[in-house]
Image (tube, rainbow, N blue to C red):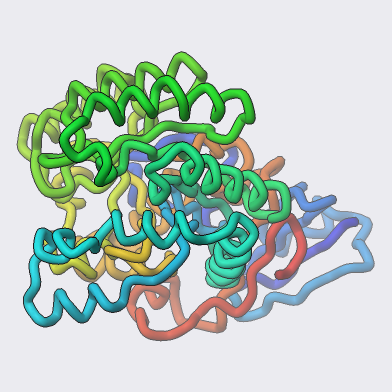
Length: 417
């Protein structure tokens, strides 16, 4: 099927080739005024200015969409989520408003262990239906590619259940989906005093089944004081890497404990969170961005929800670190997958330019999932995953009017959803 989109007010993120963006390049967002896009069988076949249409598309197709007054962007690439979960945790939200600390909430069974308990009680079919609804919701808000983690199981059966749900989502959804094994999210109660026992369970029992059933693309570890140390993270990741799972890691959310240095040694695809960054951390990330293409994924809605300091986006950009933006969609610290708000918050609170935020949420986000060959920009040969905005005065209006729903419709692989 061939579809032609015409009279686009501004076609955003047009790129002839893929390039991971950092430093000054992150602010470069190529756009075409009064543009068209030609789509064949769900793939971008051509694009350009309307005055080029007669030359580039001499034979007009029957299916023509007039996008007059609309901006068209590549869909968001959300490279860090936990959207497979059994139950929301708004009761903990109330506890926090009343002044209870994370430790106090955890002591009465809250936090990750709360989600794990609920997930253990939930069937795979029910879990799939919950996750499918969330996937539909984020796609309607413009997300076309998403990474989804396990980590709310913390037992062999429940971690496998989560990953099998993600595999079913991959099989049924038109979105591009990557799966990450995060068995090392925290230590379950049964292994609170036996950390090595749980690490052995991950390595000797979980990973072989995950590899055999091809349930994950990546491996993740929550490297943080009171959770997993850099040495433990390295042990777990190296075991996963033997099965072909590349590391994508939680580091530097609360403390700087040499997690980035270990991530560099592991050649991690991305290091995520980064609320707490020292000069040494920034230097290591800058060098790894240049030499390995390692990406620092910033999760501003988690900082917003937890009332934490935001990630030092401007410092990272000025130091030539490659950064992406993601939602961290999860029931405890970021109960939203709205990437439009992520982009707006990045501008408002982290002082990113609109062009920087859009690039970080599209092409750099695609790189953070190794999906840059199929999505993240308006490029011939990539999937026609497109956001059509409502009429607006400029591209900057998108993050400026953060409370408005400016997404008119979303196209995934050439089909409106």
